[in-house]
Every structure is written in structure tokens, then in C-alpha cells.
Image (cartoon, rainbow, N blue to C red; front, side, top):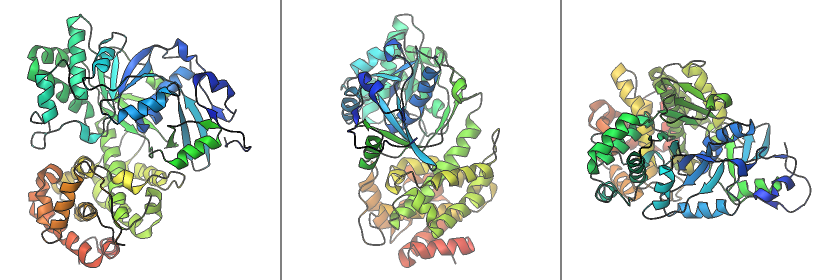
Length: 502
């Protein structure tokens, strides 16, 4: 499909205008007025609309899942702006697919409402307590799970968790709202809903179970036992590259003849693997390409380490060198050679094959996806929230490489590039704007680490036990000193040529 060629003004995206949209734009074949909700999704960002919502849309297009429409929700004040935009267009979304062979557009409509954003989450709690809701899914980012650095479980000392434990009927957090809704369902003799995490965390369902049950136990141990015994928290793996919406994306949408104030662009690839463990039924997702399995772990490891970890290999040094996008990083010979060497020598040996693909084949797929120049995926977006992404995506490979006696030089260099990026100044002298929830703390430590690299590694929350291991300390410190001394390009060349500091 191609955008409309004439100068006709774009048509405002609304339910009553769908029939007026250009024929080049695919639209829902179902009557949205016939849909009833079965899912509440919390964290209605671009990824959800390009991924999970798209799968439900595909079922609806087949005449299935009419009782599995989605109600959107958020728990943060900034969600109100997205709600306003989507409510103004009847919760419809235009998806712009960025295929290297040609851009196409479709309008999807599985989202039928977006709950108001309230400090006590009352509307959200009521919606999740409704017996029609059988799945509550989440995309609240890797850093949104209140995880304790020391235990890996719920951080019960966090102010918001303490508040929710003391005020369970009007909680602040998404997890407190879920506990409150589950409590209402138990009171009225209803079954719990399935809680489905769609965030990039290995064992995300297990983590979500620990958060919900752990929070409930702080205020109502009997409720915690009921949830743990009767609820379901399937692990899942999600995959689709979805850049942030820019003026360019809005202009692309308008070129197709659609006036959408919140369109979403995405690559021409999606994958969703879910542990088939639901306590209140589920849509027939296997009919639209979702993999339902008893074991998600191998899929998670493959994707999180090669793709998500690979993103960190590219984005941090890309920011330092002012390379604007992931595809541009892949076109940069120094960065691309570094990416491939670390992957082949230090990451791939630590992951297993999954049905249908080997780690080597998966790396080839990832490289082709990252090279897609139609996707304007910025290094800034990919580098965002490194304080959550490095512990989740890079350090597991470090752990396994050390355990197997493999090289960790490239992974240590990756962490050194992250530290150097957090200093906040590129090598051309331009400023890197704050890009992490704890940016100021990271920046101060990164600047101090210029003189004493060990200070960075003392951040146990982000560096884990490796910050105290002699092998990793030596490799990291050597690389960081050399980056400050000789510059990133010289260090990239040294690693690619020798695999170590010389």
C-alpha cells in the first residue's frame, strides 16, 4: 500500500468516519458496537497498541473474540494526555508498518474505552473487579515492578508500596489496584483474573506473582494465599520494534489520509510467546500466530539477551558518538563490528536454541531488523532507563559467561560505554539530555568514575555481584580508562582487532 497521492485533507479518525478513509488504509471489518470487554490493559503506550492490541484486532477481523475487547488504563498523571487523545478518536489507532519494501497503514479498534486517571485508582479497581474481565495485562516498563536489589522480590521499603500496604482500598500503584480488585472479586465469590505481564523481564509472570502476592500479604495474608492458590501469572515474551511517535510519524499518517493524533509506527515483525496458564479463559491467540507453550524461558533468554542486550551494545556507544538511530549504528562499521563480535563470542554461547531457530539464526534476524532504515528508532529511546535495562539484559550474559569460563571483555566494554554515556557529554562536546529515572545519580557517579572506575561498580543495584569480582573489575576499569584517554572509536577498533585491552 502507498499513501494517497492527492492533496485531499486527511480525514479525522473517528468511528463514524471509518468508511470515508482512503481504500489504501485497512479498517476494522467488525462492528465495534458489538464488542464487550474481556481485558484491562494497564500502560497503554505505543508498544501495546502495535503488539498485543494488534493480535486481538486480528482475531476480531476473523469474527472471533468479540467478548475480549480491551479497556485501557494508566496509573500515572502523564497517562491522562494519551487518554485525552485516544478518547477524542473513539480509541482507534492507526498503525504505520515500516516494511523496507513499502510503508502501509491500518486502523485497529479492539480498544473500546480508556479509564480516567485517578489518584486512588477507583475506576481502574472497579473495572478489574467486574466479572467480565478475565485478563489484566501490563506494559509498565522493566523499572516499574518495585524490585528489591538485594532479594529480587518486591521492595517492601519503597514509599509507594508502604502506602499501598497501609491504604489497600485506595492504592497508588498498579499492583495495589490489582490487589484491591482481586480482594473485591474474592468477597463476591468471583474467580481471580489472569495477570499477564508483557514487559521485558525474564520470568515476568513469576515476578508479577511475587509483586501481587507479596503486596497483598502486607495487608491481608488470607487474600494473598487466595490469589497465590487460585490466580494465574503466565510468563510471556513479547517482541516488536516500536519507535516513539514523532511529527514524522504523524505526517506519514496524514499522507495516508488519516488525521490521527496518536499514531504508532512499527517494524514488519511481531512475536508473542505465552505460557499457557490462564485461570479464567483466554482468546484463541494461537489462531493469529501467538505461540502458546509450557516453557517460555528459552524464548525469553534468546530475545532478551540477543535483541534487548544487543540494543544496549549499540545505543550507548551510539549516543557517545552522536549516531542518531539504531539503523545508523548498524551502518557504522566500527559499531557494527563491535556488536557482532560481542554477540558471537560472548552472548550466543550462553543461550539455547528454541523450536524453529538457533541462536545464530536469531542473531541474523535481529541484524536484519536493526538494519531496517525505514524505522527511525533513536539511540536515545533505546538507551533510556539503562538502570533497569543493563541489569535485565546485559548482566545475565556476564553471569553465565563467567560461570562457563568464557570471555567477558566485550560485555565489560559494553558496561564501560554505558558509564561513559551517563557522564552526559558526547565526544563531540554536545550534551546528552537526562535519559534515566535516576539520571542525576548516574551522571554524578559516572563523572567520579573517570578518576576511579570502581565507584561505578559499587552501585550494586545496577552492577550486581560482578562489581565485586576481580575479573570484571579489571576488564571494566581498563576499558573505561581507555575510553576517556583514547576515545570510543579507538577502543572499538582495539576490541575488534584483539578482543581485549592491549
